[in-house]
Every structure is written in structure tokens, then in C-alpha cells.
Length: 367
Image 1 (cartoon, one colour):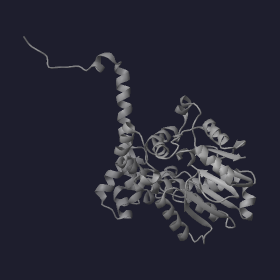
Image 2 (cartoon, rainbow, N blue to C red; image 1 turned 180 degrees about the vertical axis):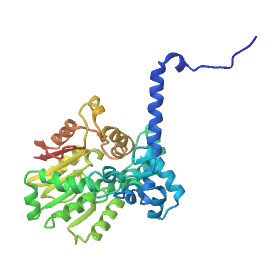
Image 3 (cartoon, helix red, strand yellow; image 1 turned 135 degrees about the vertical axis):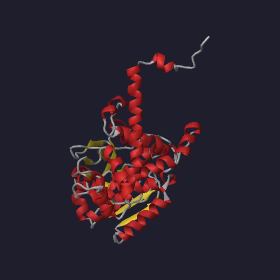
Image 4 (cartoon, rainbow, N blue to C red; image 1 turned 30 degrees about the vertical axis):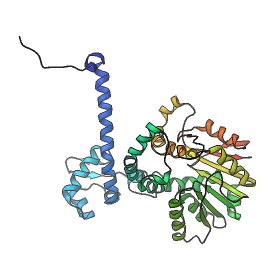
């Protein structure tokens, strides 16, 4: 009697074939996206995107000549990036073109839409994955300073265009009365300053003001001090190792939390301390990632996919490593942020205006 060696899985008999095909196709597409990320990093490191920017159609040989790289590798890289949709391809001429739109995202760090700085930081997420897995099993967490160095470097690079065009160009100016005080000479505290980029930019833009950045990570503060010295700020941007709920000083005209409040173990204590440290008529500016108040509404949020991933791998572990362990998460949402500020003693909180395609929630808080 003949026997069949064919077997079927339960999924083949219980799942609708079209749904199964769609699910496999979706995940396979995601694999493609993830496999392209190292090619993007190589394009940045090797200057390929910069060489393509504004150059019009180029053959692999022409791009290799421009960059001094090996043509065979350049040719394969071009094909990989083109099928990902980042380059236009002309099959008759065998040329590749980086459009001006993609150049503004991938080839120019000064562009307000630059995203190239994010990609190198993905290495840190993979490098720290074993530790994060352990926290799922046992609890606990890790601070920003404990992550692979690529994370902090990527954060500094990625946020620069957003802070130059947003924080300096629009967000702080939207705080009522902030610009006149800064122009006259204000005292600013930048809480959770990390590598000090936001502090340095404020000091550069308003040279009569003094900015002090506070962060609990010694290495980040050392980096910030070196960056301020290199920028020639002559003490107008100082940095100290301090917790958000205990940083020194008082009479600050402006206190900023730039993408940092959700990382804190006790954000209410941080808000209360900021309130006590304000000068009369001073203000707090809270910059937080765009998130809906209801998770169900975040499915329409263009930032949500990144935000929840970073929250799981970086920001929630950061809070859970600290006293308080509030674990707001990256995607706390405006209503929850308002609750934190109210619990910290702020009675006037308003959402300030920003650009037409916001990826942040900007809140101005006053006692």
C-alpha cells in the first residue's frame, strides 16, 4: 500500500489562503526594508548619496570615478538602493538618479527633512537587544549612557536639523515672551540635555543668554562640554551632571525638556522641581514625540511605528532604571503629559504652534 510523505501544517488548513499570502508578503516586505538599512548606512559613510546629489543621471562607472570606489561594489549598491525606491533608474542608459527630494532626506544633514542620521543608530538597537530581552524576563532597565555609543551619536545627528529649524526657528519663539527675554539676556536650564546639542544651539542663537544643560550621564556631559568648547561659547553654555528632580539653580527664565521628560523615572518630581526653579513669569517648554491619547488613534500617526519601537528598546528601559520608574514611554500623549505637569504644580499649559507637518507635541507650562 502506497503512503504519502506529504504533510500539511495546521495553518494551511485553518487560515484563509489569501490572508496567509498577505501576511507572508507583508513580513517579507519588512525583511526587505530592514536589509536595505545597512546599504543606506554605507551610502552615507562612503559619500555615495552626497556624490549623487545634484549630479543627475550617473552610471555605476561614473559614480565609482566620482567617489574613488570599486565599480563592482558601487554597481551592486546602486541596484539595491534603486529597487528599494530611493533612486530613479533608466534601463536604456543604465543610469541612476538621486532626486532633489530624496537628496534632502539622505544627502544633506542641514536639510530640515534630513533622516540619514537615524540609520547608524539602528546598530545600537541590535547591539543592546540581549540586555533588553533580559529586562522582559526579570524587570529593570538601563540608562541612555549604558547603550551602545552609536545611539547617542545618532540622536545628536538626527535631532540637529529638527532643533535648528524647529527648536530655534519656531518652538522657542512660540513661547510667549521668550524671545525678548533671551535677546536681553536670560538664564536657561536644559533638562536631560544629552550630548548638549539643544543647549549649544540656544546659546549660539541668543548670545546674551546663558544656558546650563543638565544630564545624569557623566559621559554625555563630558561630550557636551567638549562640543561647547569647540563651538567657542566661552562659558555661555555650561553642563553639569544632575538629576532632573534635583538640578541646582533657580530663577531660570526658560526651562526646556527636549524629548526627555518621558525618559525620566519620576517626571512629576522633575516637573515640580522645574516649577520651583523658575523665575517670575518664566516658562517651561516641553517637547515630546507626537502621540495620540488613545492607542487606537496612533495607527494613523506617521511617527507611531518608530516611537513605540524606540520606547520599547530605549525610553521605557531608561525610566525603569531610575527611582520612580514611571515608564511614561515615548508615546505618552498630550493628555498624560498635561497630567504630569499639573501634578508638578503647573496651572497653565497650552499647546504652542509649530510647522504644518508636526512630529512633536509642544507644551508651554507656567505655574
